[in-house]
Image (cartoon, rainbow, N blue to C red; front, side, top):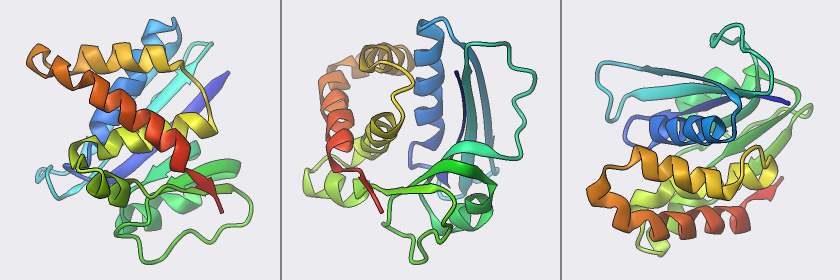
Length: 180
């Protein structure tokens, strides 16, 4: 088992956090893990992406040119990474802020209405957890229990009271993702 994932969007959307939680989750399941963030100096509002590799075998390099799964959260990232999904791979996107959806026919494409759902449910801070839940529905590479442990490890203790809200957001993402 090996999953090579890119998560890309604007700084402030929780892109790096999603990657870190996924990486921690893999570690808790004794998987080999690589977490490779990339972001501009402006961070919040600038583009950000993170590569995460989860594998049962040793990982030779965290630097990839193609991905099994791409989670795309803005138009600049769509333009940059749509063509880097391996044929037969998965592209997940939130159509909020993406006026030109993906067009490839050789990959599986999933839409998740995460931002509108987060706004409607009054929980915009959990937007990224909705997206993460959607990805886990398409490819259950780690258990929800491991995700929750990873989330607990990545959140400061003063925010642990938000864990149930985040778990609810992950489960909501699993419900609303749809293949197109």
